[in-house]
Image (cartoon, rainbow, N blue to C red):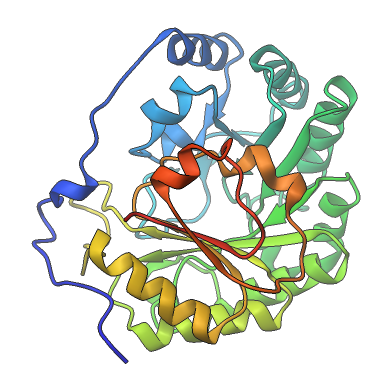
Length: 319
């Protein structure tokens, strides 16, 4: 199997990963809404390099249950430590912000709250219900923690009626104990299986560039397919600070297509390649079906002129 990655200086971002930061009225408006409603976003707490681009297009991922995580994963920039009690007014503030932003598709994530008896499940559910009450036409995607694999807690979240529920495996089986605090690869797979078996669209995400092999990527995607996950994002890992897990490799634009070819020839799954995310997948999620018949390859330029929609089985490359 050909190599997918080029070795690179892990301390210096390659030119293809560098973007020009930009701000406009939309960015300023999203920032104002987030600030005035005392909201947290993974865009800020996770030091996401796409924040300026996404906010300029009025796209943001809300982060609930505070900004302090009870785990300390080595790849993540979110603060860890002792978290404050959940804010009971937060669900309504998020719902109001979704309305003010005019979102057709809202994405919610959270810190992990191992300190709470229900892991924050009821807070999750109330946030979904609040969004749906105030914004009945808005589709909702969730990116949930593993809840230690407790199905009764996952069921509380699922019962709220989100349209897509994701949980990220983040990396391969071998690398999981090196980069994810407390999390277990098998627990993540079990969480995704339970989501899929409930009838809700199941989604996951994998970071590349942590030192995984091509075969491990294929194995992970096959594992995800086996548990019923049909939507997966692959994104280049970028080290938030020198204290975080180092970047082992950078994927090059030239080799994106090779990665796509390898994946599409072996694993029937909708894989979205994100060297550095610069598109809005979420406006088209209602078009996604679970069963995949074929894989189509789109370049970013082609995608730009397709109303920001991706067909099921589509793979976005950088060429």
